[in-house]
Length: 479
Image 1 (cartoon, one colour):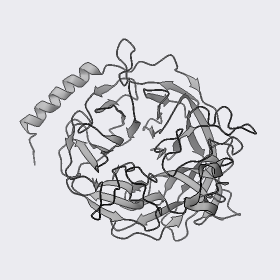
Image 2 (cartoon, one colour):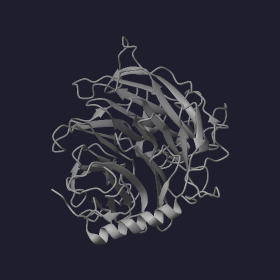
Image 3 (cartoon, one colour):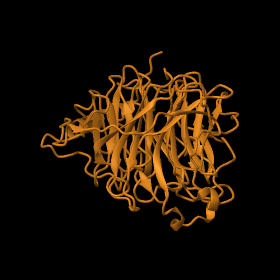
Image 4 (cartoon, helix red, strand yellow):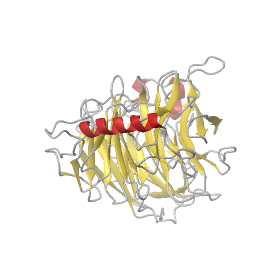
């Protein structure tokens, strides 16, 4: 059946396209192109079951590599195209940079959107974000930056060589902690792009979303907010949420710790209405209010299994799975690496059914298990934090096997002192990221906040914030 596009919408899309074309122009690489990456020295991954039970006879664990992108970072995201090019968003100052590697992390170059004069188009960023739509036939790279009033968004269809820029992509003004994600439409007819583009944000009073049917040129509100900022009994929960996801049926998922418990909002009509479900009951024992205790993560495989990763009240990472569209959930599995006693901002991705990758900051010498909510900042003086990556190829089995390792050498930690819950002080912000590429390779985005004095004997102060990309080589297949 042929469906006509409303004349008003078509006119708006055309106007936005013309404006975007005028503002966007080309890529323009900076003088920082060609920064060399360096491999990290993390150990081979350890095989274990849920609950950190080590499997000594299993030696199939992958090896980690660590690459420095040559720029600072704060809350990085990462994406990989079908061509195998890796994109990372850095934040060396007040403006973000889109960094690309075309040789699996060996070197990195700045391919940020620029005017013909060389001036960067995204000159201010309160929150940087990059998303790669790796759908076959799409392969569009999006970068979006919050400003005080709205958002700049640019997208590229040629691996970052040129960009189209939309200077008004915020849905509506005054928003924070955005997530941008893509997936097939449920009922809409898309225009000049196969997928829907969703943009969700925190506006303190709620968790709201907008959508685009034309690849990001125009956005319209989706409907009611996914979450209200205040519960029925007047508890303030704010609007901060995790990264969104769209499954192959076009259903939209938005995770968050709602009043410090793990919840998931599901929309089966492109955000017009939402169903919210609590996925577990072992969340944080305190209400973090309008901020966020943790940044939970969700992903859905091609058979519709929903995977949800979050930090529980014991400060350890837990995985729950739903096999019936979110109606019921499995018993929470503690999936942290052996020896880890405190984590922060876990994130996950899925490829084929049961095949997962996840990342988090973790510590083996945190005092939290001893003092819990009574811990003071001084208790964390000697605490060190590492970047962890983990994979499993059989998460749907009764007793799955996980392979976990630190990306960095634990002798050279990524962070010292306190890290969360929520923001990791002023060095690592709201989230990190992990992606399984179309080729089944795992890439993760971290911030190394210990690049000068943290690896010395007496150094306890974070100095600098390096953008770091972790990569796993070998291990179980994830395709």
